[in-house]
Length: 415
Image (cartoon, rainbow, N blue to C red; front, side, top):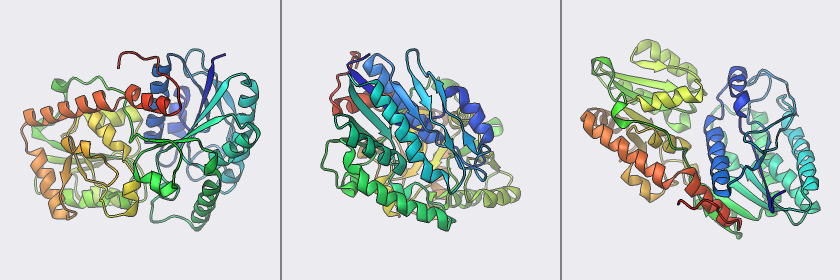
């Protein structure tokens, strides 16, 4: 038994279940959230010099529309030698699931607290989910000595931005926001993705701003496929296909490029999926690949000419959001084109090529300008990106900040 017993409460896909979750998912998988959580877990463990335990409630869609299974069974696993992890079981039916998760999580938290009475208990929660916070609030009422730290990757009302949100989902979202507002006082410290989140929550407790982190990829910049056969330039987007994220702006801007040596590769799912499929029939340079396993997505990113994040800075939520795909993109060694969102720290302007206005014409021209650069220039930009994220945004450095926030010393001495 360790002096500090750290529990990570989140929603990862356990490594041995990743393929199963991919096959059973009918909508977009939470790949970005999954990657960030595993990076946090790994970073904490490297700093601590030991494993932490996971209490996991997989972030999957509900049955029957978005996942094949109506019931997720409780299982035990170990993500690392010495770790005691639990995958919480739950009833996965749309409309009922949301009301049952709190009880399932609370039950497991009490078991954990009882098993570790003699240790200093620290609970790290990933994401401001109402069922997590409500369960943690009740736990703290009974075990007041527990320290709770909340990682906030997104604000509750901005977790789903699709235009076709159902009436039921909007009701659930409002209910969840009210619960979070009431229960967030149980949190002792916060890890936020943008500085404006602190104002939103009116936080008066300790917090740290960490926009994200990466796990270093082993990439030989000289072996990267910048241009394809016949000098094909590949422009790539990977992520959720939501209109508010600008995906259709990218598609139409690309279609204005009058050059057969360009391809647009799109990977992901969302509300614009059918529209993109129809446009791909008209413009054969558009390659829609659907939902792919995460490792294949990374390969696509690595072997592209340009990666684009078309989310514009024209919505209030942008100051509360740091697109996790930016760090993924930068770590691939491929140049990145994006809008300068309010939630992106100033230091990134040296590595991301920013669009200067929101017009479709400007986006088209900028894509062409970037892709027509020399191969050596594109490789150099990719190399700068890799060095930046690997040295400044790796999981060990970022998680050392988290441990300092919760008053635990890092055992990692090579920083």
